[in-house]
Image (cartoon, rainbow, N blue to C red; front, top):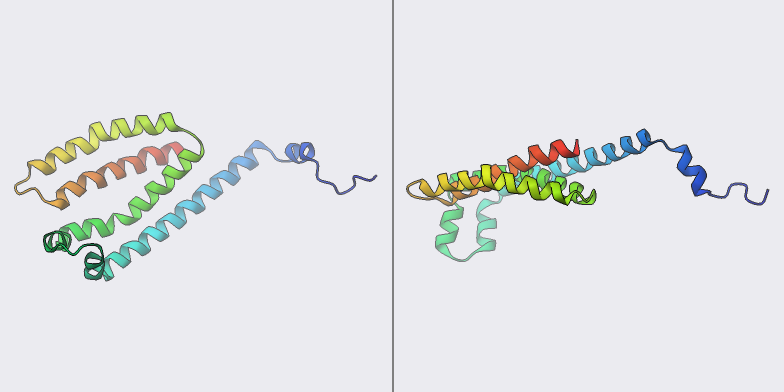
Length: 153
């Protein structure tokens, strides 16, 4: 047989079950999430360790630098990095599966029921701080982590 050892796509497709493919996809998703969390944690540690250097690298405006050097704000920014990394990884996965309608609805609900009320709370604080405003963004990302994470799982 001249075709001995040749690749046949029809035969290969019948040898792999749906369950095997699903298990492989879940494994890839889990490894990507692990990498995202590791990267987010590394970025968090970098934010903590190199706070003043990072602020000075991104702005020469003293009022902006003073706002960013605020302990509450910088702690929020630094410790939200693993969350952000996980959410951005999930975004990539849900986009890869082309589930754009779900993303739209999750954002609409998240902005309406999580981000907007948290932002209103932030603007109601006296004085309004950048940390309070960023809290709204972190709340939205926490919402996205739960909702999109449940969709991917």
